Image 1 (cartoon, one colour):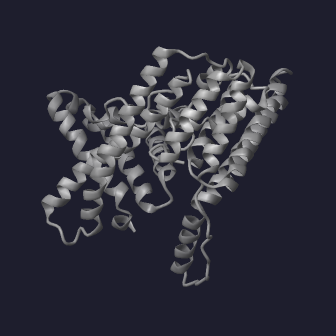
Image 2: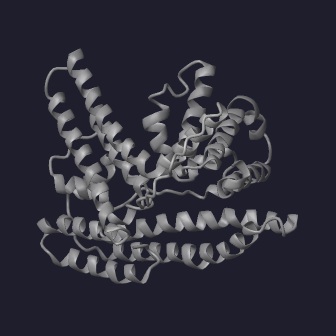
Image 3: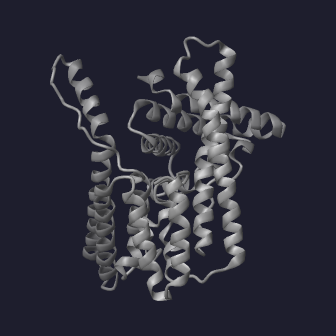
Length: 388
């Protein structure tokens, strides 16, 4: 069930009405049922996948909590690392199978063909579960937070299951942190007319971005990019500029609808976009775009790798690793890998070579520079045939 469907326009008011009518102790159970129903409308059997991820990370949290209550000797620390490793392995294995298995089979086939080894490797006929990248990262973030001691292990399984599956942000984020969302879910909320009004206005703005702007722009962009050999250069330039607007209105619109829907229920989700096209550098752009994903990679990948507190060569490697993974997270195709590395190289260049020069230029020039590079990036993002 997507936000811009007629089913959601029936589903959401019913969920809200019942949520505020039933007793406090039943509210989270109702939201959990509604969230699983929302997800099962895409594909009912794939609810088992999110349930599996929920059980694995819930049990890992309990195990880590038990170990933390004991001594901090090296043996206990080793056991904690094993618990985290098992949780990460099981969740990423599930993600790999459903999202990347055919991509990996293709790479293996290409690699073997270099040595003149021809294997008839069949592709796996499988449908990618909606939102798997989002809820997998959210659940893994919880495991790591408990391991670090940044959040307490959630003892109530149903409340934790709601944290993983909360329907407004389930299929397209934002990727919430356990310390932010679990705390809000701990106390069911009463109806607040001001919050409801604000949330409704957010939803209307999100629907405008998604339905009125993004979906209409997509018609022209798909038309031009679908037959780019026929169209002249100006058509491609206009289509590229419009695609930048389309992808923002689409993704930001969906995130804003999620924020509004949650706010009506009394829950504040993190802001995922902060005027990204007003950025004055590519680094600034990525501090404003898909904030929840960028902060996730920073907290759980970049900083554990050493961040910038390492030698220059190692820092360069850290940035390339993070952006390789960021590209791969977006899709199982070479264009996404190249897209991620494209930004990795640009960010390295800004950090070590052009950043100080760029900062001295007029703000309008900085923004124009950023937009040109971002639009080139969107070409890679949109067009897998360019790097196939």
